[in-house]
Each structure stands twice: as C-alpha cells, then as structure tokens.
Amino acid sequence: MLINILLAVAMWVVGILLYSIGVMQIILILCSAIPLTKIFSKIYPVDIAGVYRQCTVTGLLWTVISAVVIFLVMYFGNIYAKCGFWIGFVLSFLLSLGKWGANPSNVADYFQSFRKYYPQEALDDIFGTKNGKKR
Image (cartoon, rainbow, N blue to C red):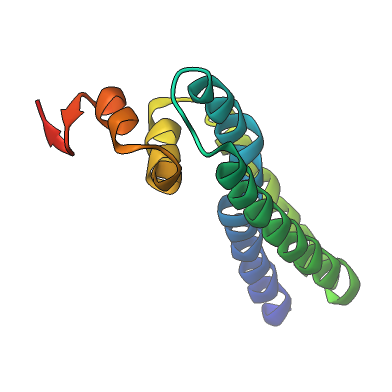
C-alpha cells in the first residue's frame, strides 16, 4: 500500500512536470509564438521561416515526448500511477488557464527565444534601445 501511495505521488509529479514543461510549450507555440510572429512580421522584417522552423521542431519534439510518456503511464502504470499522473496533469492545466496568450511574460519569453530572427534595428525599436542599450 505504501508503495502505491509513493508511486501515485511520483506520478503526480511526473504529470505536473510533463504538462508544465512539455505540453505548455506546445500551447505557447500555438497561442503566443505564432500569433506574435504574424503581428510583428507585418511591422518588421522577421525571418518567419526560421521562427516557424524552430516552433515546428519544438512542437514535434514535445508532442513525441508527451505521447511516449502518456503511453508508458497508461500501458505500464497501475491505477494509482494513472490517477496520480492525471491529477497532476489536469491540476497543472487548470492552473495554467489564462496564461496562454500574448501576456508580458510570454512576449518577453518570445523575444528571448526568437530574437535571432529579428534585425537589431527592430529589436531596438521594440525595446526602446539603441544598439542594445537603453535610450
């Protein structure tokens, strides 16, 4: 019985981590990175292909990892493992609601991840800097 409880707690942590690190990446690509790229590409010369290529690689990687983890839990896990996993996963999902769009944190993360696809002049204009230094 103690082993089953420990297994449930461990799988609860796995569910939280999988959603928070992996699935959330996929959601942020779809709800933040792609829309922001569309908006900024109308204003600035953006390497759209580079941004979308990086989004595709990241999205596919986390889709495969997530699918493998979910398959392994569902195939090999007992009821305690499955319940713990899904409780952690769903709890993380519920806590992430409202954090998916282009909020200030996601915009900052976007430019941290994709700044190499923007010319320096565009970044200076967006962040109010000149040659990377505050004006």
